Every structure is written in C-alpha cells, then in structure tokens.
Amino acid sequence: MTIFFEKNKKSINIKNILSLIKKNHTPIWIYDAETILKKIKELKKFDIIRYAQKACSNIHILKIMRKSNIKIDAVSIGEIERALAAGFTPKNNEIVFTADLFDKETLLKIVDLKITINAGSIDMLEQIGKISPGHHIWLRINPKFGHGHNKKTNTGGENSKHGIWNTHSALEIIKKYKLNLIGLHMHIGSGSNYNHLKKVCDAMVNEVLKLNQNIASISAGGGLPIPYHSNDKKINTKNYFQIWNEARGKIAQHLKRPIELEIEPGRFLVAESGILLTEVRAVKKMGKNNFVLIDAGFNDLIRPTMYGSYHRISAFSKSGDLIKTEKKIDTVVGGPLCESGDIFTQTKEGNIKARKLPILKAGDYLVFHDTGAYGASMSSNYNSRPLIAEILFKNNKFYTIRKRQTISDMLKLETECLIT
Ligand code: LLP
Image (tube, rainbow, N blue to C red):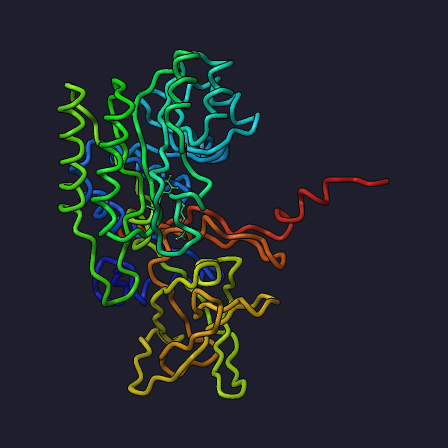
C-alpha cells in the first residue's frame, strides 16, 4: 500500500501535493518511481521480468522498466511503438507481442521488425508462417481452466477467448512453416488466487511433456495480486517463485537443457505506485444516501464501474490537513458523468455501496490509492472529457510525464475532416 501521508519525508505527501495542485488541474494521476523500483526487486529471482505494459503504458514508466533490465510485453501496434519509443529493441526477445489475432497492419510491422510473438490462436501461426517462415514464437496455452478477481479478468477455460486449446494442431503449423518455438506461456487471469498456482504449474509441466519440443523458456504469465484492502495479505513472492521454480526444474530435467523462467506482471509492478488525486465539487443528500461528487469519473478510473473494484480513499482539506474525523458517515462517491454507473463505491453487480468516510465538503481533496495499474491506461474521452495529466515523482521532484489533453487535441481528428 502506498503511504502518501507521512509529512517531512522525501515522499509524496500532502504538502508537496498541494504545491502540485497550484500548478495543475485536478484530477491528476501521480506515480512514485521509488515504489516501482521496490516492486521490481521483489521479483528479481525470476530470470526475466516482462512488464505487461497494458497496466500503465506511459513511455516514461516504460523507461524506468528498461533501465531496470525489464523486458516488455506488447499487445497492440500502439504498445509496440511505445516500447520502441522508450528504447526497447526487437532484439533478444526484448519485446514480445501477445495476442489472439493479428490485424493486418500489426502483422506486417511485426514481420518487418522481427518481433517475437506469443500466439494465442492457430490462425496467427498460419498467417505469420506464410509470410515469415522461421519466425520466433511462443505459444500461449489455454490450460482449460482459469481464475481472476472478476469473471471479466479470467483468461482461461472454455468461456475465455484467450490462448490455444489444441496444441497438437499448433505443432502441425509450426512444423509446416519451420517456426522457431521458443517457449510456452500460461496466464490464467488477473488478480488470480494464490491457491490456483500449483494447478497452473502442473498444467505447464504436463503440456511441455506432451508437446516434447526443445523449448528454451516458460512464462508464468501475470496476474499477481496486490493488497487493495488494508487487511489484504501481500502475496509471498518467494513462495510464488519457489512453486514455479520447481516446475521449471521438472521441465529442464525432462528436456535435458536449462530453461529460462519468465514472469509477466502488470499490476504487481505499478498498482501501488499510483494515486488518482481528485477534488470534491458537490455534496448532496438523496433520501438516505450521502453523495460526494468529485471531478474524476469512470472516463478516468473505470475499475470500480467495470469490476466493482475497491480502491482505498483518503481525504485532505484545502489547507492540507488529513481529514480523519472521529465520526465517519456512509458515503457514496460519484463522478461528473451523465450516467448513474459513474460511482466509485459500488459492488461487482453494479449496486451502490456506501463507504464510511469522514464528513466532506466541496473543496476537499480525495485520493484513490493503488490506481497505478489499469487507471490511466483504461481511461477514455467519454462525455468528451479530455485525458488528464500524469505526473511522476522521482528523486524528490514532480515531472509531468503526460500533459493534460486539450479540448482542441480531442476535437482535432474531427475538425480536420471536411464535409462539403
Ligand atoms: N499477461 C497477459 C497475457 C495478460 O492478459 C495480462 C492481463 C497480464 C499479463 C497482466 O496481468 P496483471 O499482472 O496486471 O494482473 N483491467 C483489469 C485487468 C485485466 C488484465 C488483462 N490482462 C483490471 O483492471 O484489473
């Protein structure tokens, strides 16, 4: 959990946030570089950490990853371009493209740059094999079961569109085009329960034995959870590594060669580094419910609306005092969007769920914690609201790493189209 409220520390604190607000509009995303570096260290036992950049794809965050020898996962042509802009190269499998399909533009780019792919469908193998025989590939296997913090983030089993079901057919295409099979990959879901790990590892070992190909690597995928609630337990990364390391050992023994063990986290590396800073703009009582309305909506942070996700909320006043009143009241926190689901305190089923918060008034600030992953990267322009700024706190200074989008930026793609 991020601790942003310790005064007199060289960390993000209320005092320096207040000076930031003087120069920037709220809402703002703020990330702490130090937290990212700490999280990277926790996974150093894995041979390769491959950052799933979909969690937070800002180029400046990617640069932090690259400087720490992290490799990168890209899931679109945009993410490939971001990786290149941050200094990653297609050499040495630095960039791997993971998907279940290619659009034509992306396929040509990948072939041109010789980017390794992690294929989630037989069609992908056929399409790349035809124009780029010998291409370096991984197979993303659907282990026929999955898990996730929400059914929308479960990526295994027959209700999921992800991964290859019939690996035998994949092997036929690999042989047909002499594709270079580097490794096998499994990702059963995001925020997956620790208890499922053993099952995934067994599935990986079985798949490797069944295919019996001379692969060099396996990937544990992503999905490591983080403690969003104050009483959530942190995942034990040593145990996590240990279980995967045993699977790697069995595979290495069977294939009689060293096997590289990759992990592909997104959330684990960045979620706790980020906050969303917002201002309370209106407070109203609607029957029994106390609504506190802020200047950020689900166009900025969609996780609560999409999955019923919980983000810890702290409040501080204009004068910089942490609001910690003895008396807390049931509060529903909503945003500015013209849509009833624009609520930050709701259940997975979409019902409002009041949170005990101190008594708030317009002008107070609310901080949403652990929003570094799937925050900015899932934002949209819904209700024609511009994308908000992203700020990085590094070496005791704030840097703007994405400017706030202007209204004219947003309208440009349309105003430049002339109809006579
Ligand atoms: N690898 C693959 C193939 C993935 O599909 C994903 C996430 C990851 C790695 C990284 O998963 P992580 O370590 O971040 O859990 N928007 C959702 C999460 C969906 C993630 C989709 N794939 C959320 O806000 O929780």
